[in-house]
Image (cartoon, rainbow, N blue to C red; front, side):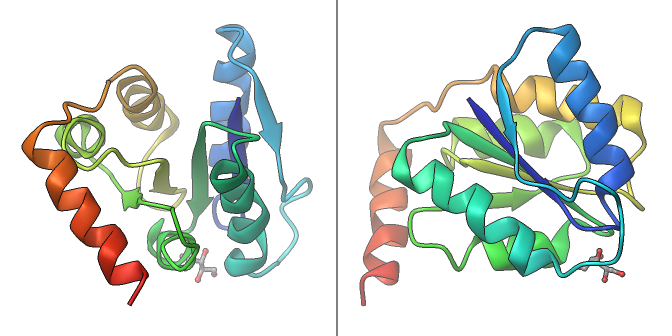
Length: 145
Ligand code: RB5
């Protein structure tokens, strides 16, 4: 199950990605925005990220104007490793090396075609583990200080 969330800056891109998830029969829970009206990205990120941490959802796809604000908010939720990506290599390697559980994109930065390529890579790339797990454990240790 994928958690979706967006503010007004990311709403249109979320809707494009949501349509792609429908076409590909990938289950999701949409935490809004549902209308693209002005709202605050931390309010949208928090419930989607909490659903990932609780295990209700496996990963989150988050959208704002740049992808940056919502990634900053997401990374304040303990257990979330959110990556703001606008290129294919980063979207793939943040799964391989960082075991990222949230992909953030900017609706004013990437077009729908590229965003779908990023989402596809993110959702279908497995974490490599090994030495990368040790580094993630060190991120978790920082969270727990
Ligand atoms: C909203 O105008 C905009 O600031 C927000 O979507 C995002 O880009 C923040 O990082």
